[in-house]
Amino acid sequence: MSSPPAPWPHPPVAVLGAGPVGQTTALLLARWGVPAVVLDLRPARDAVGSRAICQQRDVLDVWESVGAGRRIADEGLTWTTARTFHRDDELFSHTFTEPGAPAFPPFVNLSQSRTEQILDEVIAAQPLVDVRWDHRVVHVGQDGGGVTVRCATASGEVVLRAPFLVVCGGARSEDVRSRLGVRFEGRGFDDRFLICDIRADLPGWAAERRFHFDPTWLDTTSSAGRQVLIHPCPDSTFRIDWQVPASFDLDAEAASGALDERIRRIVGDTAYEIVWMSVYRFQSRCADRMRRGRVLIAGDAAHLFSPFGARGLNSGVADAENAAWKIAWVGRGWAPERLLESYHDERHAAAGENLAVTTATMDFLVPQDERAARHRAAVLAAAAVDPAARARVDSGRLAEPFWYVDSPLTTPDPTRPFRGRPPRGQVHPAGPGVLLPDAPVTVPGGGPVRIRELARDGFLLLTAGDAEPARRAAAAVAGPARVLALPEVDPGGTLTAALAARPGEVWVVRPDAHVAAVLPRPSTAQIVAALHRAVAHPEEVHDGALPASR
Image 1 (tube, one colour):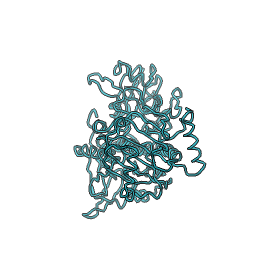
Image 2 (cartoon, rainbow, N blue to C red):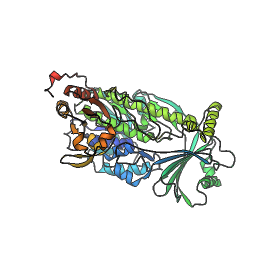
Image 3 (cartoon, rainbow, N blue to C red):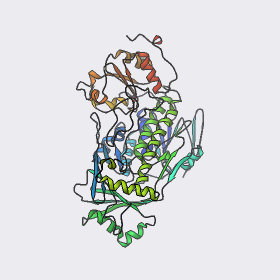
Image 4 (cartoon, one colour):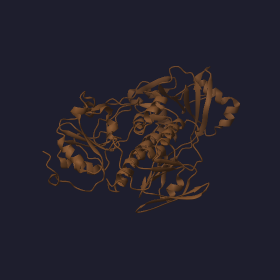
């Protein structure tokens, strides 16, 4: 951040859960000068298994804003291609692209355990974050002034008073949700899956995700209706994810040698070491409310998705960023408390999209009736020769940012309509509600920097013409707002081209790097109105109430 924020005028914000979403929430709050106390019921960090491994580039970008993204990217394994097979034949592959000049690759694989360790190290150097282990929340209450959290600890009961609470306690947050009157709606799946992390030397496998439908080598009888997912990880480690029968017994399979046979069908005679293994079922659920007063619910505490598509942790980090800047703006008096309701509006819509995408994937991967099974078999058979059928093969649409095109905070632009999700591996053109494309820019007197770094310092006004109305607007609103003229900061035109910016436009960018408005040759009042809308400010602004801009 370009300059330290003023002291926070309240007690620390409480964050429930020290997993990666809770860690990210606390660090992002601290970035805005907001102290946070993180409460976790465990006695200490438990680094078990790889768990969430696939980190999308925009999530790395968020982590870089708190000093962790580059480390995670450098330690992780970068991959750019997803390949899909049916039996012995490759059906198609996707290579992921991005407009502008992004700082990070499309996807990086690193175990959740290592990601948490890196975030812990960043937290240790951040005096505004206080992590307290062995704190089991037994009561949450709130009034107009804040939230009261009562915890059971080994030393007795502890009571904390906080202006806001962010619940990031993961899937086992039922007690807190029920105390808040929040329903966790959805369904569970009976199908079981086996994960093995193995270490092996498999040349050519390190830069791609491989998904196999009905592989002929899966078992010695019939593989129809089954699939295997293989993800590369650092240190010559591969995560292999099998669909297994409901009667599967991991201990018995390991003891009998059947697990070794299962792995050998993939790696052949190559030597391997099992690093971690687990059997799981999954659920598709979403909280009916992600905000109750001054309590916000994030990550797996708010939504559970199937793992095919890597939308769990990636979506949780987006929850964290959305919550953090809005808490900072409300707590500092820069925005009305109604801004918190937009957290539910935006992130509940994001969870709904992720739920729809992942549920559709599971309905294809694991048909729940004979009709669905016949449809799956027919699509896979046709995909070998029919490009249209290939488009219907669903092995998991990989994580992508949700765009706030329908948010009450977004000012629409009829000349830049949202046309829906583009094909897999592509992004929608920039416009209102869409995440700002990243690109290097040069700030006068400051040298080269990425545009998203500047966007995350507050509101950003990018001008493609007369900058004076934007400067007047920035001076007229509460909270940090900065004006940058595209011809000055983007002389090479990389960012301007990624935006497809038109002469005279002003782009209003939120503190989470989402575009709030694109305004054609606006007056000062029109820019202020867009800024006010972006923080749920009810005030209407007229040119006569502001200094003349032209």
